[in-house]
Amino acid sequence: MSTAIAPKRPEIKTALPGPNGRAIVEADAQFVNPSYPRPPFKLVAERAAGVWVEDVDGNIFLDCNAGVAVCSTGHCHPEVVRAIQEQAAQLIHMCGTDYYYRQMPEFARKLDEIVPVRRPTRTHFANSGTEAVETALKLAMHATGREKFIAFFGSFHGRTLGSLALTSSKIAQRIGFKRQVLDVVHVPYPNEYRNPFSAEDCGNGGAAQGALNWIENRLFKTTTPPQEVAAIVVEAVQGEGGYVPAPAGFLKGLRRICDEHGILLIVDEVQSGMGRTGKMFACEHYGVLADIVCIAKGVASGLPIGACVAPADLMDWKPGAHASTFGGNPVAIAAALKTIELLERELVANSAEVGAYLKRGLEKLMGKYECIGDVRGMGMMLGVEFVKDRTTRTPDPELRDRVETATFERGVILLGCGYNTIRWSPPLILTRENVDVALEIFDEAIAASI
Ligand SMILES: Cc1ncc(COP(=O)(O)O)c(C=O)c1O
Image 1 (cartoon, rainbow, N blue to C red):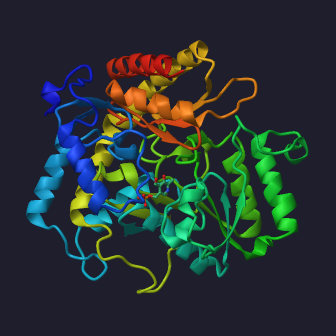
Image 2: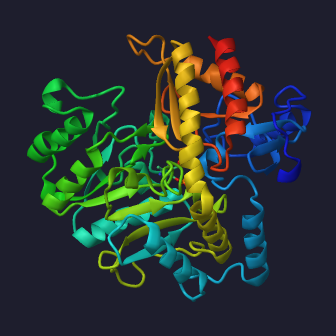
Image 3: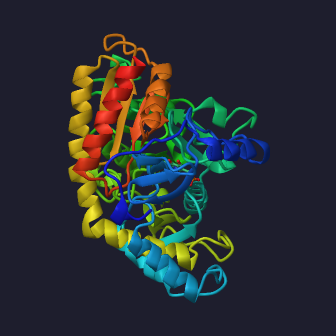
């Protein structure tokens, strides 16, 4: 399948999964790690181009999830494929922790230009989001000499032991692993649709003020002396926790608190970065510079790479303090540089423009269906929250699952997040024409599921 012959609509020809797909799902159940958190439907992919994914039985889907917010330039973008092929023919691996190659400083220099961190910066290269976060945690401890962290309920920062101590979006991620390895205190995230704070906590402000007051008036005066806190770790838009954007004033307030107490502000842009929200980084919507930014997912259109970016005077540790054999692999960097070129050329703008069109369409559906409690987000990072009714806002996770499955059965790939939300995280090449098709099918799926 190539973009040139891409269909205009999904084409579903077999039961899902079809016979070839079922055989693969069975083999997977026998041999593959069963702890992968697979959704209620089963997609068995064979090939993909642009926004279209073909499964092993010849069914064609319109992808509005992008391999969980990764294939930012669409599947197998021809320019990205060429960059990967050319690099693979030249140099696949050399281990940048011990040797040098031009791609590492080239990519780090590009990140220095675009990442919302005080310049000049330095970058550590990792292979994944969780490793980028591990780096940020170690760096914060190293740079401040402190050990405590503040994170937020609903957050997802990864599943390795350090990042897991921050992660708090689902109990399944924690159960069985006993004590957390880091000293982390969690604060409710200022979700404006479900403000977790009392009127007293919020004072004259809303949820954002509630969270800031919680940190300053409760934590700092009881369990968590600010002079012992190394960093506050936050997602500018909570991803796995339900596609919940930070309310206005929240990140600026965290910035102020950090500055007052010598605490570092770590912004995890693993899911919200690389154009997903209609700006290169979600932080930019809030006019805030972080001390450390973590990047992965969409940065290399599907090749594994993560990055932790910090001011050069902060990332000032000695050889051996942190390194990675594969991190910053030349082939992954070639894909990342091409991805960023495409993002800057047109895709960040497309994410903002077509994302706004998609959001308007989802809001229209909210007008039609009482079961949609909230439509939120920016660019192509949009959440649709399902409720039993709008007055009580009682979550309806079963309906969410039914809608997710019904949409898939009609040929559009969407994925849940949080307890009762569907996330829209399409490739940033999505067109208005694609949006019209996806919304028509989503509408039909909701009507069939309620
Ligand atoms: C905000 C955020 N941080 C970190 C991670 C972990 O990334 P990875 O799965 O590449 O380790 C994720 C993954 O979903 C994420 O959304």
